[in-house]
Image (tube, rainbow, N blue to C red; front, top):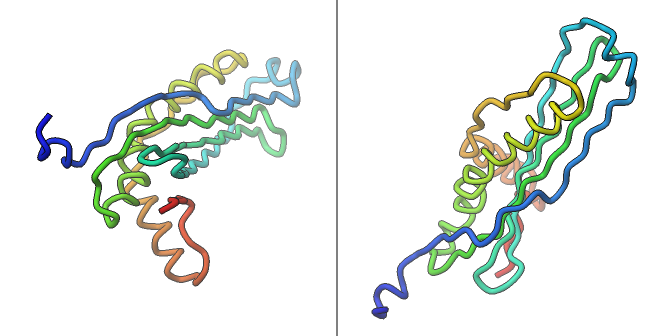
Length: 158
């Protein structure tokens, strides 16, 4: 390998895994006897941190709450994570890489985990709509600028 190739910026997936998975059906079995159209609320979170030289854990979490009126039909939570090797990336490009590019890689796995979990709970699948991680990242950056001392969720040890 040439010295120039060794200095090229690189992003490599080292490991993908489910970090957390949970399903609650608090009103079972009665909820299965009802024919209702639930209201579904979806929350997406992201995070990342460096844990070794050149290695970062990035995660995308999702909480799906389905309710019929005030009754909760189910609460599904999943956190999909990955270990990424990131080398020779300029510091000003590292945050967007961890906050946008890595979550985009993880999202299809999270989407599948949520769908499978909800189906295993006896409900029709929940298919998460595409997410703009760039918009989420920009929103977090704006919030961090408006609240001095409150940085973004992404933690990077330098």
